[in-house]
Length: 71
Image 1 (cartoon, helix red, strand yellow):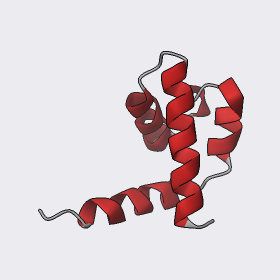
Image 2 (cartoon, rainbow, N blue to C red):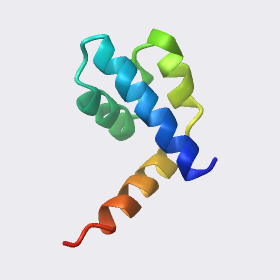
Image 3 (spheres, rainbow, N blue to C red):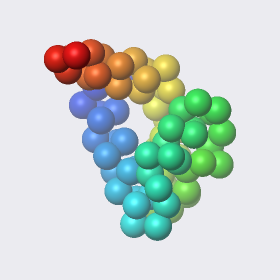
Image 4 (cartoon, rainbow, N blue to C red):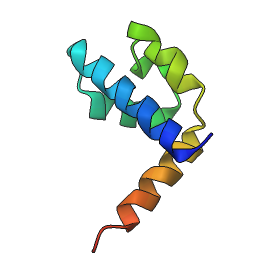
């Protein structure tokens, strides 16, 4: 799965969680740390979509983006 697909899927899930009144950042981070899909609402198939992504790949992409910052 390419980075653009992971990014667009996460953006969609973030938006869906926000639309349902959740704190998307806390929900997604909770899922990434624990692996518990219960953190992600099934609203608009968000749970199904995130389950198709490799959690390690998500974290790898996030870290790669973070390292691009001038720190």
